[in-house]
Image 1: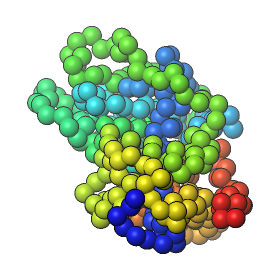
Image 2: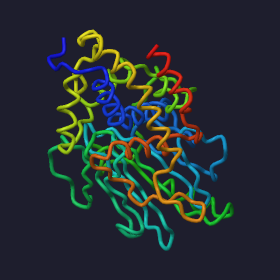
Image 3: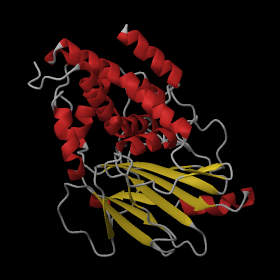
Image 4: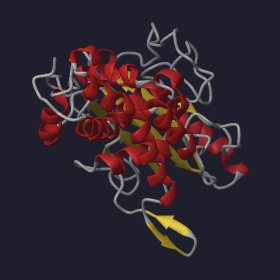
Length: 335
């Protein structure tokens, strides 16, 4: 039994807060699984620690994540830094714009090497996970990642379709190398890291929206053990721990009295309704028909904003779990 006696309404509110807090991490992990569930590199997918390069501008069939650019070609990679750092090599770019945005497991952008930040010269960036200790070889610029999961979203300026060949030549020079192989013959890992038991047919955002309370919070607890929250999240984690939500904790509704269990069960649908409603209202300022947001990338403890942006950027079909569906589910659970 829970040592904290709370009402159904209090448990519901706490569950909603915890869902919004953990939504980006769960969605990122499922997206990573879908995009890396292949032993071979394609234009959209690649094993862990390898690049997937788009050779043409995106079309409506691109549905894993949002990818609306019509003036750059995209290069994406999911990194696993749990064993060792990964070195990202980029060639000299001349006057061509490029950007390599790096997101941690919680969707915070922690680095963005590229034309506007590090210049257009040839560079080798060593991306280092939070638990690694060691000395990097000379010539490597260290980038510290808060988590061992990293998503690189690269963009390379492309001046129309006639420019494809030039950009393809540049993309071939974007190289990811495990630190232990640095200085040796650079090549793709001999044993590509990929998962087999992955649902690659259902969009990641739909996979998350279909999770019930136990499935969602159990997965969140497991993921938080491998991709820990930050010190700024301490107060929130102390609240969540009362109902069994936290890094490595077992989540079991039977550990709570009926009122608390019912509140937690209804929190998933309530959180989904909150989240999708926020997306529909827009998170930025309406300007000349555009909704412009300037506070993205680092979210601190604004968990609703972080979750909302995660839903948008990781929703390749631009379709949200309908508010109506979430509300109907809440009504069924409350009956």
